Image (cartoon, rainbow over all chains, first blue to last red; front, side, top):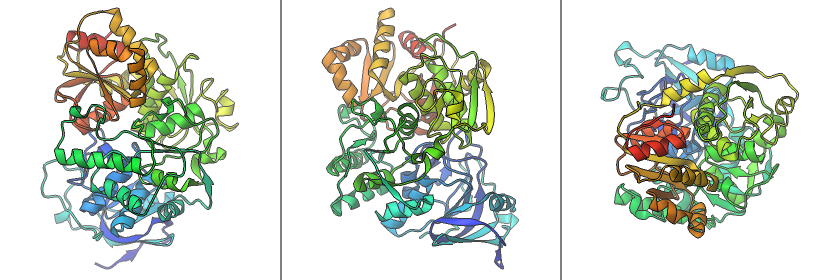
Length: 176
Length: 393
């Protein structure tokens, strides 16, 4: 599918890298520690609006982080074992999230880019069709987000599926 | 330093400042990445440059027999704690470093991790720290510096959202839960803005502010709050807001607090109890004194396990005063260096576990699979005696 650059999208690269995946939009911030299962890449915080969502390989659209500062370790471990999102787009700067990705990059050479969107860019990303394919290219504070088109319906399994659904799409990213 | 520089870039900071001390949250074992990071620093000859305290680990090194997880994880977790000490950190292993005798002072720049310690340091002490987390805390300790931005800059410490508290319960023996519930509400409602709380009792103490802050940092990303007339940067509402009008106001009445309590309590009076766990964040000497008084008020044995999480430093002081022996005799089990909601310690975590901690109630269901009975410390003691959940009034 042809890549469509999202014109005039104002984003800043917080952590460099390049990734492609389907977008996974969270309706509220997530604490990776206590809220995310590293082994299966899924949100497990019972009171989270998106509990059950699989983040593995996706381009995670999350307004910000919350909760424990241990989230950086959990995220780094998820990147190490391959269950992390392939890129993270934030509305609010979050060092805990950025650090998990920086350390995984330093220790293992595995790059999961983190991008900060301004309000306009954020609203436009949130308005994309669910599970759209995105490409994130973040380098030296510059950032490009490409829209590769909506996913085919056939692959469009809900990202808020209940636990136990083994057929969820996985591993679209290229953080290996 | 490269990680610190990349972090500064991620933060948009252009310069660094020196720090007085650091508190490290890297001792909790989250997998191989935790250990790989510290071993790499050790191999490169790393050593902390400022006084550095350590947060909880995954093990109680004072009572290692309490650990009920796998041997492999235990060995890795022990190595992780040990490696931090080899880097020059003090083996404090507490989430409440502000209860140590030597603690930061008003206005000092520090690099603290652990969400409840961060909010306490900024709000109650008036020291200045951002929400440091795993990895950057240790980088800051080793270099003695942090990027100058966020809450290090007084411009960014002004309150933005006012919580007007009405009808706050006054009874000192049962109001512990309402501070925690207020914290849960503030965490949910703040949306990244700095909260100003108006209407708390003037005699609010540090333990109560600890419970409030810990809960607010569990449900939101609160790193600083101002309590008007109580915390040092809030002598009055205008000062707390830095002379600007608030972005928004939220009214918190007793109905709102009761609703928050109902949302985290899964127990009905009379339900059988598996255990009680208090001390999240770590119990202070003041809280132990209250517990001892509550246990004395109605003598008799406890029907279920009663765990109290605390620091080895506080426990040592309790041992010296004789209080630890008295509490053990009454059925209290001490957990030091770690906490019951992050590591397998509870003998019976499957049923109802009662706590007065908003933070424990928020995290324990996902972390250890416990179902939460939520009540005040007095209700926890009453329930532990009968083996069944009891609520006052």
